[in-house]
Image (cartoon, rainbow, N blue to C red; front, top):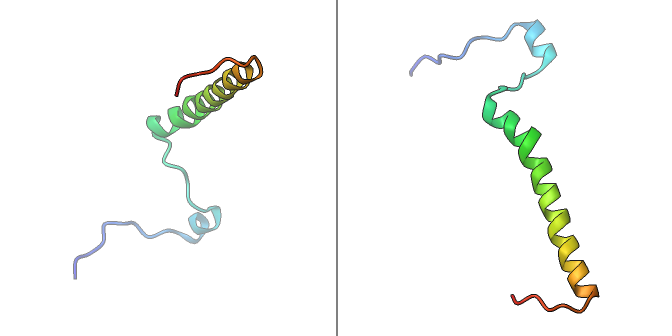
Amino acid sequence: MPVSKEKELTPDELEKGPKPNGDLGSWLYVLAGIPCMILFFLLFFGVIGTCDSANIMIPG
């Protein structure tokens, strides 16, 4: 059976719980990606609602 390379956690570390990895990709996704998706969908459905209320047909 191969020996695991993971280090043993001390009781103090077990009480604090897991820590986030904190790599750049995950931070950029949270700080930039999610707000941009929210903004995109708000604008997208806003334009669709405006065109619908003005009776402008958007070809699908």
